[in-house]
Image (tube, rainbow, N blue to C red; front, top):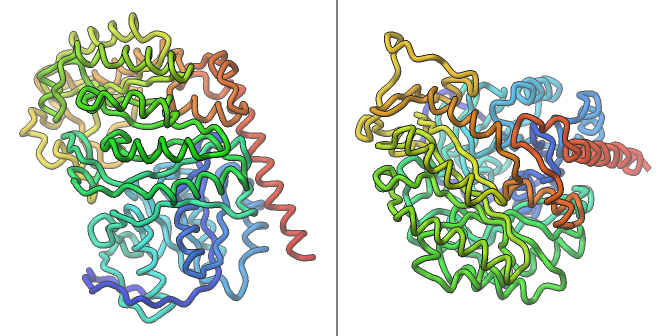
Length: 507
């Protein structure tokens, strides 16, 4: 069982007693994409003999509906309940709901897992941080087999497992996610696949643990082909986000994806994260991305200011970046006939004054107005397991903490100190000034980003013209969008299928 001391044990033995379990998941915002992490863990554990049921859309169900489904599923073989926490993090409603569910089933083991920090108790026995395939196996081997207690330390009333450090699930042989019938996946769902894990680069603002990785962790062609074909044949899935931190980090990976697309019996559509400097170094990637149908592309531009770019590990000349962006747009439109590019920019980087940010915004407004670009205020966190170079030593990069005597007006755009966020200032600006600047930029944005384009393509049966006809603002009008109504309808249909399956089970 659980012990209130820091424990650093050897790895668990290869033994596990299987049984039944339920994993709860969902998004706090209504979307037609599904939280793939829960299904990934379910896939892995099903292969190990566990009977796993995923219950999605939990935030959009009535509490009594959740209880009705859970009561019908939980039996003498049920050993634990899992919480897929990544997209529920910091959602107060989700936290309350999870704690109430724990009260209803006090004799079951509760395991939370996700990629974001835990900021409040969920009344769980274990809290996993990071990719959870190996960590959850260590827990189950210990609790229901003869394995040693996992490497862990106290958190709230349970134990915290740093899976990034102690149970790293990368490189991993296979990243497949397949779905069973009672997952109720439909063609209108947009989900995620992985081609590899880890990032070759090490941007200074990035807190992702697996940065600076040089190993090739890419999936094999046959495994990827089988995953995509299975999901299409069984559920009609054809639109995907590719989760890789940098999709084009290796030419060989793009060749693998191109080869798979050529073999498929359907036409897929992909969204991926692209680095412009790799396009310059490997111009053959233009054609590879087109043949692989990765026509929804997200670029971490961050800044056009050369000094700021160098300070974070990116220093390409702004004129070159602009050229590459426009070249990719032209190439995709002329070859695939489809293109949606989103540029991501950060307000508050070292050495960059407000005037420089305004110049960057002006260029995108004038030259990228048929695509999407979005600003984010710089966030510096001090969090266990996801510490960026800025978070480790912000003073080295010219930042210091805001103190009361600074008399800096607090922005209403974002709450301060969320997830241990540091209130920062530097020689040019401060956290709250950048938040206000970003709020102004976002209010006038009217273009679909690549994430939304992928979701819309699924929901509207991949009718690209229909997607582009839907003009939306990123945040202010989200509650009035037809997109939200369609998502709510899908959530209700899913819940209805889960509830109806109770009658089928009883028969």
